[in-house]
Image (cartoon, rainbow, N blue to C red; front, side):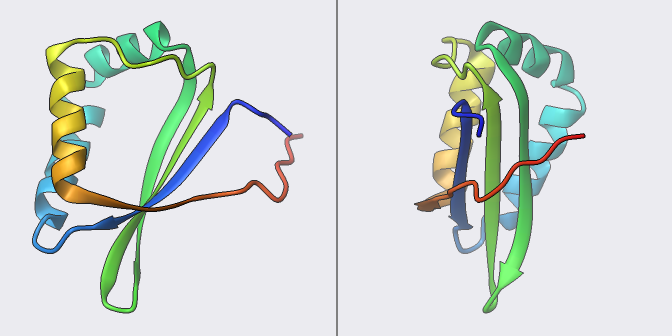
Length: 102
C-alpha cells in the first residue's frame, strides 16, 4: 500500500457549489501551468477531486499521491486555500482498502 496517498472527504457548503466548480475549472484550465509547477515543487505526482451527491448534499473526495510537501507560498496557493476553506467543510479522512495497478 502506498503510504504517500492522502484522501479526504469534504461537504460542499450551502450555496458554494458554483464557486467550487468555477475554481476547479480554472485550476485545470487557465491556471493549469501554475498548478502543475506547484505540484512538482510539492512533489505531488497526482491530485484529483471528484464530486458526488448524497442525501441532497454535495460532497468532494480529494486524493493526492506523492511526497506531498507543504504548499509553497504563492498567490495561487493562497487563493486555493482560501477558496477551499470558503467552499468545503472537512468530513473525514479515507482509508485505502486496496490499490491495484497492472
